Image (cartoon, rainbow, N blue to C red; front, side, top):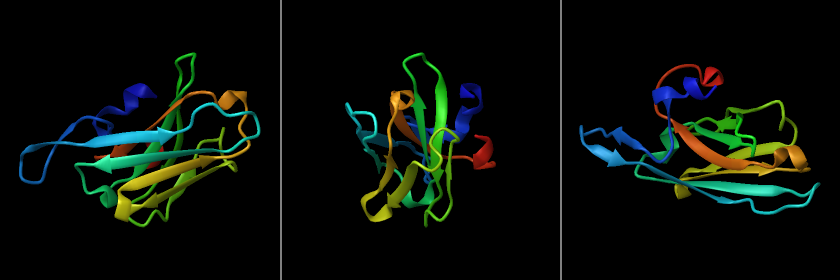
Length: 132
């Protein structure tokens, strides 16, 4: 899956701006921490250096074993399309607040398999987001 991310997703990297100038796009995740089984975890992703509302926001996680797993995505600008990976379906809720350039992911009924490093990314290219 990691090979398929290519230029379509961007997290903490550079992109060509509308004026042809390289601009720094920045995404900062927060939340999480140690949680007990059964608890709820709230994560947020704050964007800067981009027109946040125009981008799909993706959530991924990387388990201690090193495997990369897609968790969720939410469309922009309205957030009307939300999709979730099988491992979190029915327990996860993605949302976005474009006025704050922020997206959130809530994950309920945590279990040991949810232990991972979570991070967000934005879709910067074209293509079917379900295939990314």
